[in-house]
Structures are given as structure tokens and as C-alpha cells.
Image (cartoon, rainbow, N blue to C red; front, side, top):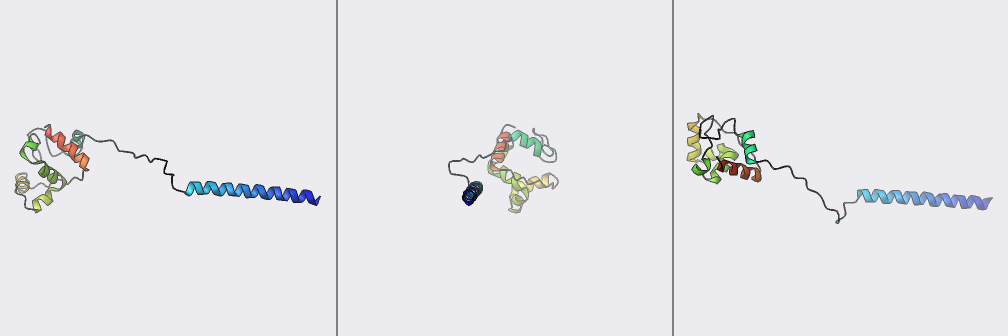
Length: 136
């Protein structure tokens, strides 16, 4: 009888130790960083076109053609101004004026001192918008 009790006790002890060690191994696997073989997936937001950017951000103040609105019409803007200037003006017209840029100051005065909104587009968005402006 004692022999059977020792065997059963030993059996349940082994089962308990085995179950605990497997649970600990699973927990360690969950806590450890992903293995180097696993590749992370980068999710890119869909690119927005220059035309979509223009429609969403510019049409309330600028026409696509040469007609003036609150600000100047955009037709031919890339022929009248350098790319760097256009980008700087879109990003922060007030900073451009503060730097003493005569063209920026003249536009400000010409359009009743209306302050243009500063836009923080990404480089890709800015490039897309500029390419769209080239088509006008």
C-alpha cells in the first residue's frame, strides 16, 4: 500500500513539474522579442495625388486657372517662381516674409495682407503637389 502511494505521489509530482515547465516555456516565448527570421511588415498609407492635395487644401483660396480668388490663380505658377520658393512659401509664407523676401512681401500686400495658411506636407506630398502645379 505504501508502495502504491509513493508511486502515485511521484507520478503526480512529475506531471506537475512537467506542466509548470511547459507553461514557463510558453511564457518566455511570448515575452521574448521576435526571432530574426521573422520579418516586420511596414504598412504604408496610400499616397495622395497632387491634385487631391490641391483640392483638399488650396481651392478655397486659389483657382487652378489665372483668375484671382483670395490668393493668386495657380496657372503658370511654376513658370513664374522657382520650385524652392514655391515650396518655402507653401510651408510658411510668414517666415519667408520675415526673411525679407521681396516677392513674398509684394504678394502679401497685393492680396490685402491675407495670411496664407502654413502647410506641413511630407516631402513626398510636397513633390506631388508641385508636379500637379506644373500641369496648371
